[in-house]
Image (cartoon, rainbow, N blue to C red; front, side, top):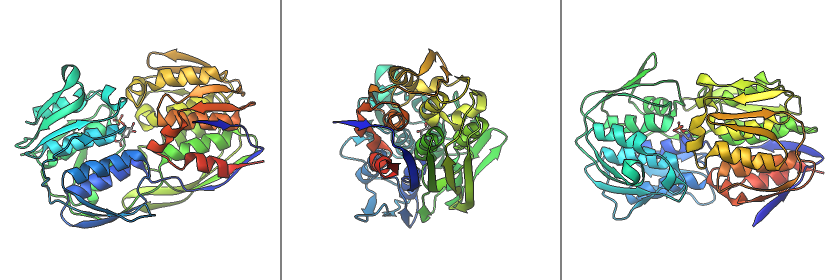
Length: 428
Ligand code: S3P
């Protein structure tokens, strides 16, 4: 099946995007490790978070889903999990695999982790190496880099480790293992990445000390907490760009997480001249939350690089689309990590947007776009990557002719309601 999308006369309405995927994974995994029982609400409805639930259940965690809601009750395992009698299938989810690896590395059990074709081609040495240094045995294919991963954990000791890349997944994997290690674990970060793990650990009774760019965690026990998960800014980003680039649009996004590690997209769009109102700012469960209102506007090209990149990495494909509507040139540099995501997002973004007439040039570490303010119709493909599928859906709302998107079902990974929301917002 393919989606056929064309530009509506008006794009307007109020949307609540699904719960934040990063926070949902952590709320489940950390509460599974904890002592006590927790109620989680606003969980991401995407298939990635279902993968995490499936893996935790295989390790003996009791998770009661409440049908027809995005709420669950989860019973903590007090730091000790059962050995799974089956492989832990992480589906398409890099966060599930890397965080679960950190969790099982601290357990005296044997675990085998695998995933779909996309996940099986994503690098795992970045977690295998520090977890091995901590004392776990980690065996991976392709000379120790690719899933499946076989992990025999237990008897860990804290390490001092320099992260080669600013990655929240790698950081969180090591911090999780650090909870079960002997002695402190010290991480040197090259740049800041999203800090949901540090915030949630803190709210669950384990502090992660931050000294400049260093993080220090001591072994400890988490205590279950009820968590209300805010909407995912990475999902909201599609509607922000849709509204700004459509000539007749106003979209309100209620209850969006605005953790500073995630708001690169807001800062960049504002720097480009976008009209986004951030209102009703509040704090829920240790995470900043706000409502966002985006309206039609005009954009100027920008240069994006340096420490901003880890704060906007997941939004770069949709930002490339925004740049095609901006006046002048936009350059994205230092984003080579984008090649290691669910697809090689530099190549896939360039290839698919080129098909729609976007003047985009591939670079090793990013891309360059010359804004033209128009998109042609045509046939494009998500290549199985959820963020590409949704980026191309937004392109359909902005194009002069109909766009046909193959692989539209990939959106289910983070935002199963995306196509329904697109139809609700489109008004003729
Ligand atoms: C995530 C961290 C990011 C992001 C991914 C989710 C997380 O990856 O791209 O979608 O939940 O920790 P890295 O920080 O590993 O690059």
